[in-house]
Image (cartoon, rainbow, N blue to C red; front, side, top):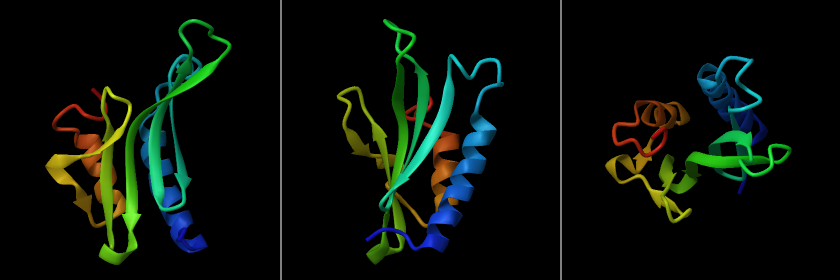
Length: 115
């Protein structure tokens, strides 16, 4: 089940503010930018950059993902490993709010999200 409209707007507002703070300066954005999407119960943050072989093509590289688990009233945190699959972020697998998720991604103690 997807978020209600109110929940969706609240999540989008929080993630949008975080992404806007992290985005590079406007002159750099054609070469590197940051975006996000909300699908169903999940939020994904990703880098946007030109494909290295053909700069006319744009590629996305996932940074972090959180999925809301309504039955537990918590967000499950994932990171994408070198095998290109999502894995639970073991140091802190769950948080209570979208803001807590963004703080974990921002702190990135183990270099899983921002490298």
